[in-house]
Length: 303
Image (cartoon, rainbow, N blue to C red; front, side):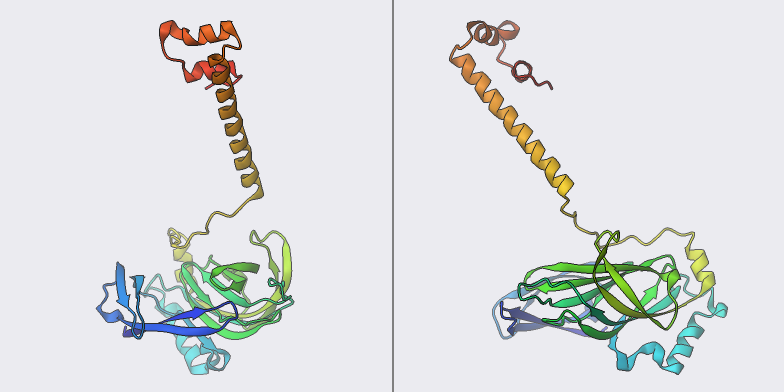
């Protein structure tokens, strides 16, 4: 609850970076659990930064290097284990446990760039908590060696780890994904996971090495099982599906043909290509205007 320092950077196509400006936000002055729209003038350059900031109380989320791994310290591990011991089962029922994830490396990733390389980074998601590694440029075998900790609110949650290729100011390219149920985690073991496609149905190119530790209170976890799951704030955007695209193209084709047939029908009526049809059309329904239903019926369609 202090000062949040913000830097705005620009990057060109050659990966050259330049700091454009800075600004500060006093977090302690913002109300909790409320959307705060801030317009911040940038120092040392023209322009402002428009931000929407919502402060939500959260404990246990952190990113660190391997050398400062929280659960590697015996005293820290003992303190956390005590926090989630059975004797503390009735304290803070939403604080079920803590998950530590070591993102070590990935091997043999898909080459997303024309140069035959990728600029991979890793995104970790557990419920509404999202953390990511730094980007390693021009590498198909990146070594991140980062440690992430997440608060566990539901023992039935699934940790999703997705590898992306950074693509400048464009959306990142997908390089693979794994989904790991918390209850399947074996503490302290380095595991190699085969990357899969977005739907987790087929194997993708490459593997990722993760090491995980899970400490939780079984009584809290059991009670949370019978409560509604936390609503996700971030939803996946609608994926581009070939089936949906084909269906939409067919709709456009049918609509185009309908409009074309209506135009042809009206043209033929005004040009009196068929005397009977033109006469019936103009006197249809006792002098009422030419109806769309009548036109569609005459070109083989119906409402």
